[in-house]
Length: 241
Image 1 (cartoon, rainbow, N blue to C red):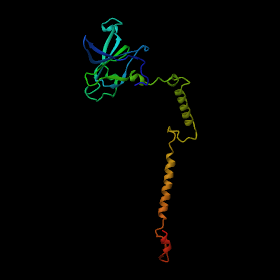
Image 2 (image 1 turned 90 degrees about the vertical axis):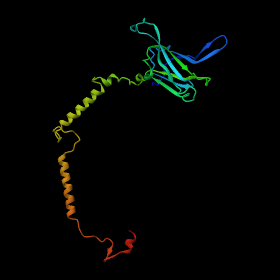
Image 3 (image 1 turned 180 degrees about the vertical axis):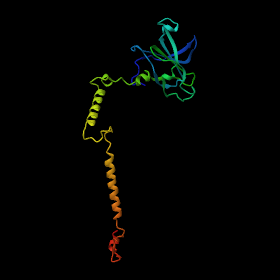
Image 4 (image 1 turned 90 degrees about the horizontal axis):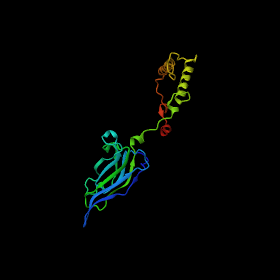
């Protein structure tokens, strides 16, 4: 979902009624018209709103049909992209009556693009609720278009002499040349830099092994009586240990 909603004009809901000379019958149906006066190519990817006791919602869009559809070019057509979507599990109960809803592009019957208008139809067949509507209605472009990262500038992608990629390649080649041309280097056989000499490691390990063997041979086997004085223990020394 994008950060900015589409600029559109949302009209007040109109209640459909059937009137005769004596009575007015409320059909439990309201219509909200949405237009896009300042958008050249409107494309709707998500519709967000908060429900207020609306049981079902349907969405129809108006656009100009293409010439290859068997109709004249420029003819205005209405199509239903969302048909009677349920908002309340039961129209007579509170569940879902004031929840937030998002109708995404996956729930549309077709791609909603290049439209000239939209009509949102609200239905509440239950006589329990006196009023029903939707609030905080917002329309967004396609989430795929909004999430697409912007293209990188040319100085990062092109292999020009001033590009960062070209400079990094030159620095790498320079380091390799200095390493292989060094007469004091011991790794002229093509080994990677940073690997220590195996011969020096082996000689150091042999010296440590020799020292440890010498210490183990010269170690005295006589027990040291640390606190013995003339064959007896010193009481003062034992008290502080």
